[in-house]
Image (cartoon, rainbow, N blue to C red):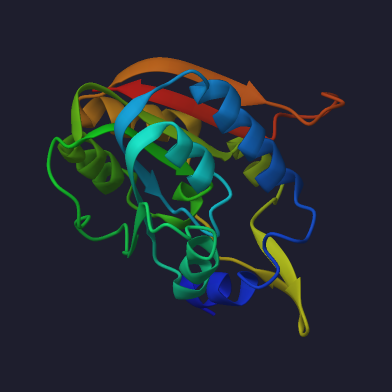
Length: 206
């Protein structure tokens, strides 16, 4: 099953089933970007909109990209006034957005499904204005080393999605190669904080 097919299947239950990785990430992005007032924001991999409407409240304009038709259908249901520019797009291809246009790019729980990080950072650099930020939050590589990956249950059992292993140094190298500066790195833990971190997040600046 391809990644797009898997997310189309997952869309129906994605918002309803408890998910520690999804729920902690929602907290991380809010803590990381709280207080920002933005003109134009680009969200990569918006999914069912778990962060989209929070970002929209802080942005004059929001463009949200995802390659899953069913995920986008779910996200659009809450946009009753059609304020958000939703677009179906493959992030592995040139993004259908203008150059030097955005104040912030947000990317959460997406890059494990992307093999070529260099391309993502090149496109992010192209589409951001100068002195703007690229926020990333992903499953921590430490979790991946132990076998954690995106998965969900359906009527046929557990569906495990195809993922790519990206080390912390891979993110930093791709960012610096594209011209970004590292502004912040943060590791986030489950509430008991007794285990390894669940997420790694970055803020890079153009």
